[in-house]
Image (cartoon, rainbow, N blue to C red; front, side, top):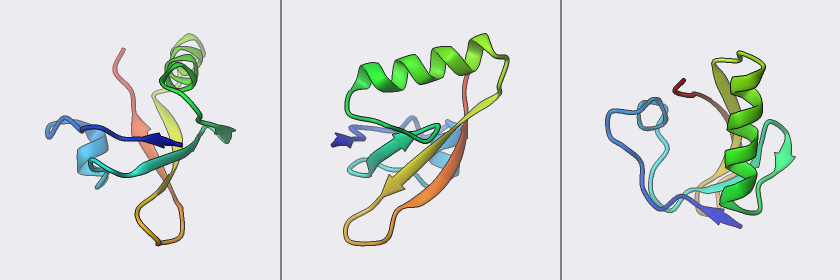
Length: 73
């Protein structure tokens, strides 16, 4: 499991409602098991000139939900 440790309050992730303790299940429809998985997915999106990544996020016992998050260049 990959647990969010903190979210920059001025970031797109914060505006989309992500917060500390949320679990990233997948990124761009691939399992997110480590910070390196996230870094690799962001780098891949940047190389492809995509402005965002798609996270599958779970909070507590609620069903997971997809959230598109803009990435910085």
